[in-house]
View 1 (cartoon, one colour):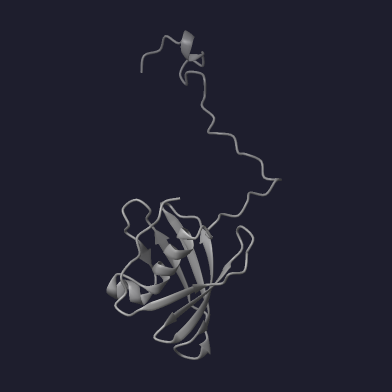
View 2: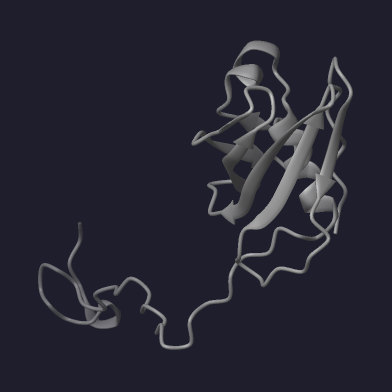
Length: 146
């Protein structure tokens, strides 16, 4: 698995990942300490159009000493390293603790997609009509010009 370079934070942030094993697809307990104040999140991988998507749900905000309900989605671009996050810190400064935590989770191999349920059947591919829409003959025997 390729390693993603970390962003550089202006302040030193210490990111701790709970050592407890979690099942694939289950949220991961993550605590982030910045300037001695710990903020606790649940993190889980989510589908993304490109790269790796991670969703953080804040449980405890150490800065305000209060329970919190904010949620942030992070996208790690594994090719061009143009990561993104929805938090105000990223929107203002272009980096944040959520991106750093997501990179560390990815490097540790903790962001695993949940297994597919066994009862889900594969959808058939798009059906292509094997006949000409004008003469309704198979394409091999069609003499129509379009």
